[in-house]
Length: 98
Length: 153
Image (cartoon, rainbow over all chains, first blue to last red; front, side, top):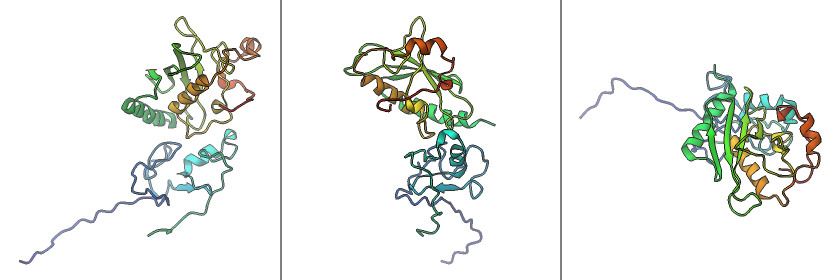
């Protein structure tokens, strides 16, 4: 039997690579807004490159916009919301896993 | 567009409705995203056995970047617990409500912290500066610059 494929649709899904082991855990959310990393921060309308994630050297990850909003306040004392260490942005971990 | 606070509070409310509050905490009222009321009691052995208190949370549109204003409600059916960090007007001196607030905290987390603050109380007494504070206290406890001493709570 011969089958002719006349038509096909490609479906793709993307996910930020947070470098966390449980990356198939769909419950990975930004600790500040509680929206999944793949969603966007409350100030944005479209997820993706325009609403990226930010990594701290302490290994904690947030929506960049959420973290910057926090760091911009005096109350934050420039500390990571998770561990209260001084926030130092880590170099973006690109392609550390394929 | 919905403010940051209402989106985040809706998520917290959904979670409370789905999973319930932590033990000893009950949601009394959350009709809007500005003021929520909870009842709080300490389960197990403590100086507050049998006492139920009422907590009020007030949120501004920047929550959780800005901390909620949290206090005990005083009224005909509610009193503030007698505790070294709780003023007789219901204001609470707790660092996580002030300079140790973090936006990853939540309403539930605050309730649990306050519950354990009560649970670990050794002597029922008002703060030493209660009368002076209450006389001049602002209506909103967030306007007070508390000086935190002792163990952080």
